[in-house]
Amino acid sequence: MRITRVRRIDGCTVTSESVAIDSLACYQHCCERLAVAWPGFRARREERLAQQRRYGTAAEKVAENILEDLFTMVLDWRLGELNNQVGYADLVLTRLGVKYLIVEVKRPGALVWNQHSVDLALGQAHRYADEQKVASVAVSDGVMLYGRDRIPGGYRDRLLVRLDQPYPPADLWWLSTDGIYRPRDDAAGACLALLPRADDTYSFATDSGLPGILHPKYQLPARCFAYVGSAADPATWHLPYLLKDGTPDLARLPKAIQAILSNYRGAHVSSVPEAAIPEVLVTLGRTARRLGKLPVGGQSSARAYTQLQDALEQLGRLADALA
Figure 1 (cartoon, rainbow, N blue to C red):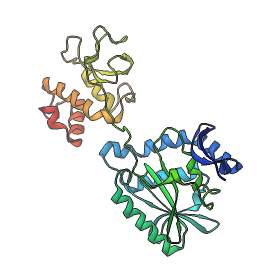
Figure 2 (figure 1 turned 90 degrees about the vertical axis):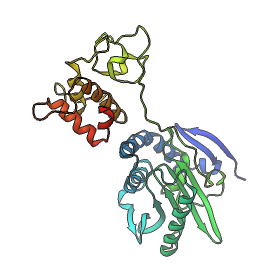
Figure 3 (figure 1 turned 180 degrees about the vertical axis):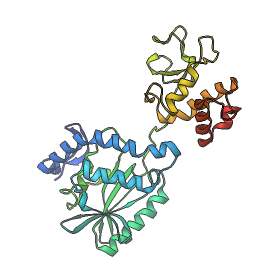
Figure 4 (figure 1 turned 135 degrees about the vertical axis):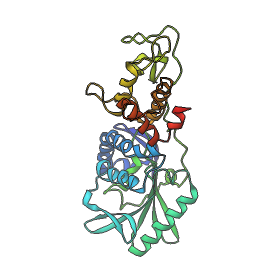
């Protein structure tokens, strides 16, 4: 009889794993590897998804890169064992030339909340697996990862995990080089299901701050800064551009623009999240408009304002700044 339980091993979240599997040394080693490698994987995944946050969507290649990192950085597959576009299959994992897993990959976010898309992706994966005589298939969009084994008359669930959580799911062991060839009997927690949406909203505070709080260096309230991360924390206030009375600071406004679009005194701004930059530029642009600096008036215009107008036009926000 197999006994299931939920516990943590070396910082790794174990969900409904069999005691028989828990006792395997290879499983223990895998959990240790997951716990060590997961923070680096998460950071790299966030970097890869910057395109999605920037433009609202990302190509399928981004999800493929995330899975490559997962299999080689977090799990124990070698890079040379990952094969792309084999018989139209997006990703085929092999060991000593033997095919163990076919993965159908879709663009980030395309599957995790769309049952119809999941079904279509699984249909493709099964078709490629039939053609190549591969026992296991998986589908992923870089957010969710679902795998199953093909058995006579149907299939058996292997794992369902999400790749955006803070702790590594120990179920990933079932796709490791030691776990991929083992049948999973206790697959209750691996059934296919749409996952709940995570709070992936990127925003920043725009209020004027709490009464009486001033920035310790500039002695200005929050409303005088183009970016305010938290109205209660002056350490998150960046790019001063107004005087204390709320009028434009003629000296600091162009410096704030330069800090984002070129550099100021050799330094580039790194304290403002990329997702906030368009709104920050609109804020600075509206102030430049009040001063008659936008729209620019030809070659005589200061370079900072020319750069600002070009950036706003590229982002499709120039009309907002000039309104």
